Image (tube, rainbow, N blue to C red; front, side, top):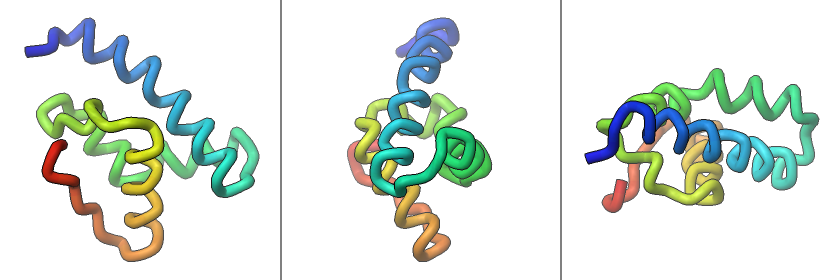
Length: 80
């Protein structure tokens, strides 16, 4: 089991990587990328350690975000 400190450290590393993927894939500004990610249901779920979404790569998280934006659905992969 991951500790609270380890989890927060993981998020501090993971979130900027996801934001960078958003910037590159969607060709948006850093500010727009940050707003898009932090306002998503995906980020809300990522904040909860129990979802285990922090196990996913930045690209996999981006793909989940894309699905949320396109369909309104947020379906977690089985490994999450």
